[in-house]
Image (tube, rainbow, N blue to C red; front, side, top):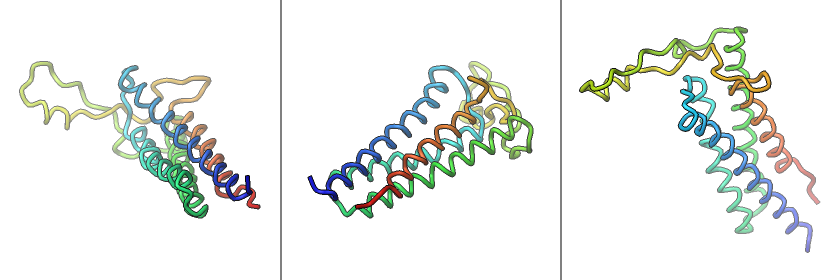
Amino acid sequence: MNTSASLARSETAIAAILTLGMTFVVGSALAFEHIGGYIPCALCLLQRNPYYIGIPVGILAVLAGVLNLPSWITRSLLAIIMILMIVGGGLGVYHSGVEWGFWEGPASCSVGGAAPAAGSGDILNQLNSVKGPSCTEATLRVLGLSFAGWNVVGSVILAAIAALGVFGKRH
């Protein structure tokens, strides 16, 4: 097997790992929300955006590798994922700082409203009036880290893997 074919396989494997990793992270957040009942705050929802953008980019990177497109295309897509994960990590650091009281969160992170009354007729207006919980308090901490803190860990790991694909040795 020649070196360029090996490199293409490596980049494709990295793209697949990244895509699966991003899917796992955002899937976990969605599972905690929909199965576990943890209602996300405004910053929690914002932190999901890099994953929502990154997963389709990762799929494109996998396809670029599978279709043997020029290596620069796959590396460029991996660079986009790397940047998205750095942004996601930054959002997680910001949110963690808000939770720990290091700085103030945005106004949209105020304490949420009451739940809609059962049996009321105007459900759509009720949904628009209900807000998520405050961004200042972590709803759950595992090993001392909130969801935002774990997002930082996941984002940094995924950004590092993407960096391997972007800046890894070329023969």
